Length: 114
Length: 114
DNA sequence: AGATTGGTTAACCATCTACCTAACTATAGC
DNA sequence: GCTATAGTTAGGTAGATGGTTAACCAATCT
Image (cartoon, each protein chain N blue to C red):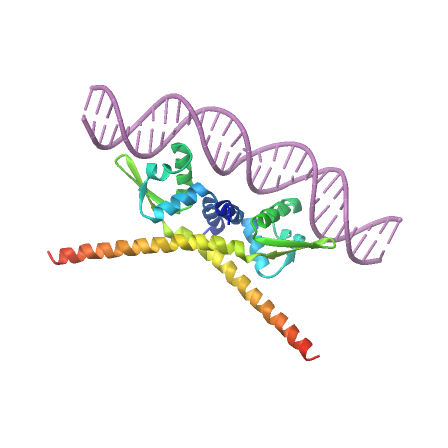
């Protein structure tokens, strides 16, 4: 559980690129080989490989090479950590807005009783 | 709804830095002025300002200057778009893993009946 | 008015990122 | 064994990012 922050850095950074998100979306429909992931992207194969390795280093994708083909699949836990961070923020904010709402309401009541 | 992808780029990129996440965590406890956000960070004020403007451009933070102090507050919708993207992926994967589970189970049954 | 506080701008620098092409390795198919 | 396929490595480049210091503007405070 060391350096969780650097972990989140890598995950969010990995998600911050349309090519990499496209790869994840593709992998959501099932495993794929490298060329399959690269084909729809407007870039060379080596470029796509770099993106793939960013995803792998972020722990979002797991790959395995069998013979000469490398098969890639999604790795859910990394994403779920990112999701948790976002969720925690959202809950905080909602609580805050809620308290603010109560506060404003109480101001209203006070004025009503003036 | 134009160029939603570039939008997500900006949001995830903004989240991919511990200083910026720290700012958002601070803002989750209520609005703050610029110096207040910058103080805990191990960097100069101008550097912190740059981070702040990244957050603002991503739509994660709204700021307003009154007199000489600029007050910053959280802007939830941008974050919720990011959350939605992640959530959509997670749902896909879970569905997939579920189907895979059924498939494996059916293989097991088949073998049982051999 | 002068000093202080809060924020901003400018100029600069090191590093990282995202691509490219070319050359290479390793397996599979004929 | 030759050839095609799948992926990888190397080397290079343009531009973005994350930080610095120094100088500056604008509102408060005394």
